[in-house]
Image (cartoon, rainbow, N blue to C red; front, side, top):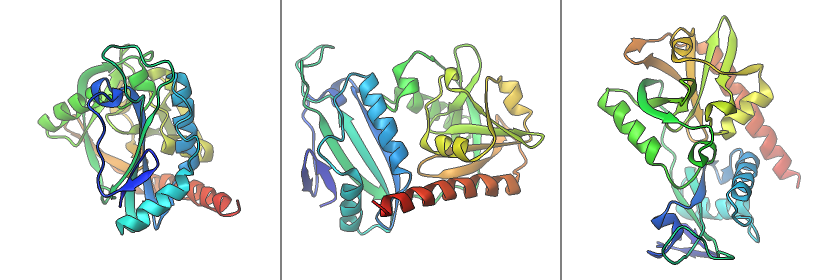
Length: 276
């Protein structure tokens, strides 16, 4: 029983064809790395999920449940020492149309899969999609991922692993599933949230640990950087070895600094959880 849906563990699960997550992409999700039953960076995921739900007018998606405990149970049942837990929240059943029910009953699903080994490095290619800083799909981790999927297809067609996207003003925003960082003369930079950036949990960890400048930057700024990195909750921090066909140098010392900062933040989180 490795799928939890609305309070029950099951071997498999399905949602209704009238569920707004299926029909409209009306909902949110969090993808969480799990090691030996422990959800890494869980507090940051919970904070983002709750604040996003509030902004989108959804009830507390974690009301009445212990997500850490559920993830531990599911990881044990799945038999996976290293796993990825996805917690999805939909606005639930609804009649046809854009309006929600007055008090929608959320559909909540927790599922597990094996955690893939992170790539040693990745290549980026520019997508022609532009993110809007006012768009909920750019600012929140919504169930609607059409832009990201389209951008990834463009990147793959160009022979790259991941797309890099700009905002409507031509400023660097991020990867199709990751936050971006780059170094110039030893100083680390990352796009500011105003550049249609999803507030990633790893990004939050690195901001808390390191001297990391939040900036507005052009594609040429990124291309002229000494080194570039991407991050998300599943793969951690990974160096970029190419951008639009241009080979880039990997700064292994800086990579180690980023990874150590993330590990320290996650270890501290686990210690705090253990003392509760």
